[in-house]
Length: 452
Picture 1: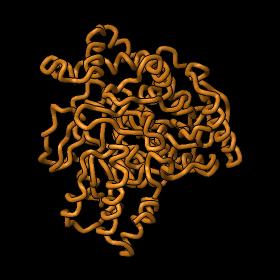
Picture 2 (picture 1 turned 120 degrees about the vertical axis):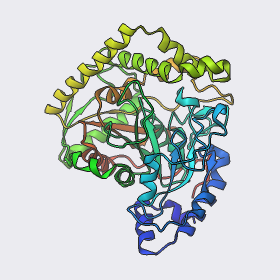
Picture 3 (picture 1 turned 30 degrees about the vertical axis):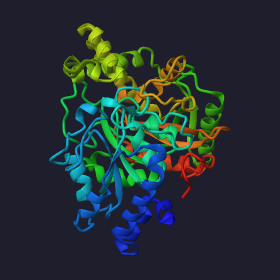
Picture 4 (picture 1 turned 135 degrees about the vertical axis):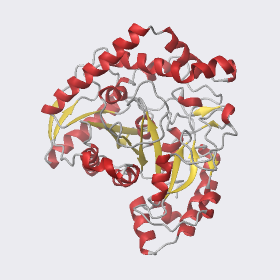
């Protein structure tokens, strides 16, 4: 069982397709791993292995019965879609989201739904319904949000790949803090049921996996056939590198050194690296305005109806949105459009922009249910956010790849941002990062989670 869990997803798919292993053996391995690690990390509060066993579809398609997890914001028939809220404890979906149907038609087997902060509000994956998800390398530290459960499920081996969702870093930050790969695809590339989002293109669905090749495997299954011709093949060789957006983000020396060392090593593979920081003045602030406005539109009525039955982070986001004037929201929208144009000009000169994904180690978490860092940690964590809101505002794909460890054992993520629809080329560049980076362990080996 342990050897099977250790295999890359693509090798499991290959073995399933050839009949070298069967679906029951794979599900047994997942069930065993869930029993061992879930009490320690709480990443998959809704386990669906029995649902997967009852599914008698023949494992056709590129995923050939590969177990995956789905973030608890997307409908899976017969399972609750809670958004991490006690208010939706019994909200069982009658039908699967089109994205889930597409994945299942292509051979994916859903074995669980992963934890999120309530209605995705906050910096850490914790809620009053299911509790806190723990960082798999050190349970006293944060795993990030809002796809924290998804990243932890992959990092701990309870799934080979996971569905995630990213608005302003919700795939990339947890993936970086947990030492796995996460891709925010080009907006519109991966389609799902509409939510009436007032800021189109902000939220996207994408893959989380242990390595880049496995992320590419899941991405191919996520993308509708009609979208594939729009994806540019690459390669990406001209690199603009700024670990900290030209000094705007306080990246720790150890993380900066790890990222810089990895990018320098890419030159040995034929990459041309130049130091360059794009002009981003006001971009993050505009993003915060749009995020606040979005929260007020999506959740304002819910907050009015349920008040303090909802968490403090969601109520604070809605209040911030209601404080924004229509003029401020309109100005932020124009800033987004202007910035996307400036980034297009950047990609006429460079193929990929590389930064740190998150410039400091994960922060300590307590035993309570607050999804925001405590005390001075809040400002320190918030100061990292411009690294990931950049791609959101530009409408670009962004990939985080592990590139090393700190002396304390914390994962370090390197972020690669490409022009729209260069997702495939970005993944190829990510594989080159894996070739030159410092060694990183594939699954947790610290006492918090048992090794395979």
